[in-house]
Image 1 (cartoon, rainbow, N blue to C red):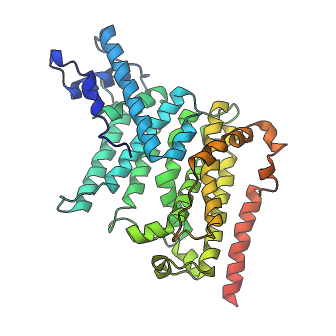
Image 2 (image 1 turned 135 degrees about the vertical axis):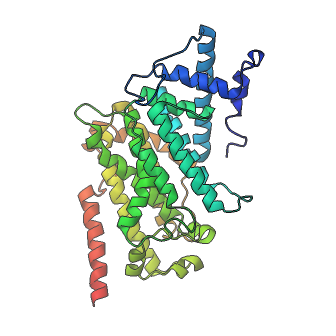
Image 3 (image 1 turned 90 degrees about the vertical axis):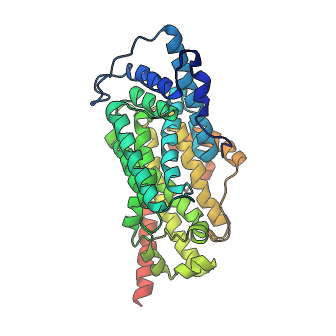
Length: 396
């Protein structure tokens, strides 16, 4: 947790002698940022390209305010997404800060759903209203460059620096948040296809948000790199779900595992609530872990498609998050009473290996721990064989 109310630092930069308010300062800074955008960046902006009559002293103040807003975004990212933040640390500074800006938007979206509303007459109705207003606010930023508060400034600056940043994944993530609203969203997922849609909306979208920042290597395009980027987000979300089965059941009465998978392996919802780890549950977890690793293998194909300076953070996140699956296995597949956890030092010690995997030579001379690691085709065949075996058992 951050430990204090974020965004209050703006008051330190207000010119109180002139009667300026914090809101006025934020709007002036936004105007200054918009003045650096190309004409096509904000198609509906009426004042794009107009920097105003700002003095060098004011511009210096705007730059300091924006830098502070970026720093605050980094603090938020570090507090709530430690593995993700670790990956950003090896990016060039402009890209690192841009990813922080994207994460803060995602975090604020998530907070709309998770925030307690003890005084609301109808918490769900209030939440829906807040999400709707947030979506409109986001659309106005992308269309016109509008901002509301100081924490909007980094994302505005990110849009100016990376004008191909699309709004679609931002809108899709909001729809993903709607799926998590108690009593209004999707309480259960019948099939993997249904769960895949949820995984795309709440996590795969982050890959699409990040692509313009990471950039593609020569010979590749965003369209080619899109599928691996989506697969990485989906892999992350599956991993979250498998790690948190017990916690989701106990604290939220939520079951994300596909109902048909549970039926196929003979696992009941009551078993999850009672925290019973038996052979059926272990086999179900083996199957779901195999599926997650298949998506990691799909994502791995995208690392060479990125600009060289962007490969390490993606590989590092992929490796660190993938280790959670290893921890689930080490815990005897018990994700009902035990939480799979990868410590900070283990993540740090893994950086040299992640770096080596980004080098072309690693495909010819893999690390010892990568010897014999299944290929994407082998992961897909493993998943298919596990499914076929279950069908045969049930048809007897």
